[in-house]
Length: 194
Image 1: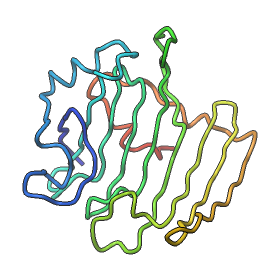
Image 2: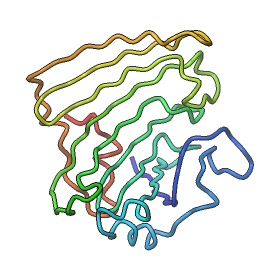
Image 3: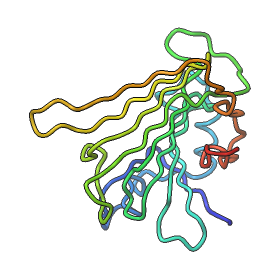
C-alpha cells in the first residue's frame, strides 16, 4: 500500500475543526520536506529546536491512522496510533539516547521503552486522551525487565485502580530499532513487526 508523508513543527490529536486538517494540530505549522530534513540533521541534544511531526496518510484514506514525533537524529521518537475518529488508541515511545549534559553519541539503534493502549467510553466519536477510562502501559528496559500497569480510572474524586505486574528475563531484542535515515519511517509506523 502506498502512502504520503506530511511534516509539521508539531502534531497531536484534536477534535475536527475547519482550521485543522484531519482534526490534527498540524495545518498551521506545516514544514516542507527540506525543513523537516534540516531539523532531523541537528545535533541529537538539540531536542528543543529539532522535534517535528511526521503524519502518514495511506493513499485513498480520508485521514491518517498514525503520526510520529521525531527528535533530531532520532534522539527520541513517539508514535501515536489513531482510530477512524482521530482518537489516540496506542502510543509507542523510543527513549532518547542523549539528554541533559550527556555527550551526544552516534548510536546505531534506539530502544522502544514504552507502549500504552488506551480505552474510552465508546468508539463512536473523538475522545481526548484525558477522557480515557483506562490504559495498559508496558515499560521495557534493555536488561529484560518489563513492568505492566493496568489502570482503570476512578470516579471523580476517587483514586484510579492500578494493577501492576513485573517480569524479568524477557527477550527484548525486538525492541531495538535501527536509527533511520530521514524519510525511512516505516519501521516506526509498524513497531509490531516480527
